[in-house]
Length: 309
Ligand code: ADP
Ligand code: MG
Image 1 (cartoon, rainbow, N blue to C red):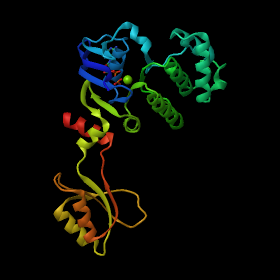
Image 2 (image 1 turned 180 degrees about the vertical axis):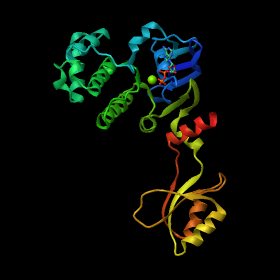
Image 3 (image 1 turned 90 degrees about the horizontal axis):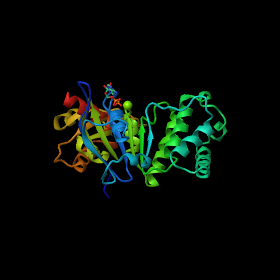
């Protein structure tokens, strides 16, 4: 399918400080790519480089297979981290103005804005001044302006910060729909859950270095530890626990259940099969719960950062 956006060996220094150290990412066409990292990792710097606001010290950016060109800004929709709208202008007036700047005709701009305002149920904001809107409300308007010219590449810098959970969910669903309609999406976040919920691909950056990247499912497979969470009922639980501990790496587990289980996490060796574990457990107890533990993006993040420290 090919990559729509490629950043190759990007380095960026601010004076003596290295904000990005040889960072490369590739974003497949029509996918959602999450740039994950703590505050100060270098996410915004990379995004600003892709948007040609900041020049890298070295490295290259390719859009749809060709070196990025100043004219390409029109193909990109960019929601910056520092959101800026003119406070004293009215919402509708400003949206129309910014839409015209993106090359839409007046009629087109009006039609699309009406569509989006209706979709997000904000039509009644049209005649309000920006300064009358809350931070989240203004961000919703800016989201509309970002996607209005239907760019093939959408870049959202921390799109969920400033939103309450309900509006974050609305924006999340809009992002998924834009992807389904063919857009390629790059967004940055310091929130692991956003990556978990939205992304097919991710990169983890920390202190200017990329620590890992790839398909989220592949990364999870790589980081899984062959551990199973089990809920057991047995007549002599003490004896069972003793026997299990002698044979496996056993820990306590914590999950919700309606039976009074012995809740354990049991690790098997990579060459052992989950079926063997299950058969073994079935011969010793009633098995109420048996689930493989899949590492969360949060677990992976902590492990990667600790391993690199
Ligand atoms: P993130 O978006 O991941 O939180 P940034 O890319 O904004 O991080 O910043 C990465 C690092 O680069 C931070 O330490 C920040 O202080 C520094 N930095 C960013 N922009 C500048 C700048 N214009 N001048 C000096 N330092 C900067
Ligand atoms: Mg940032």
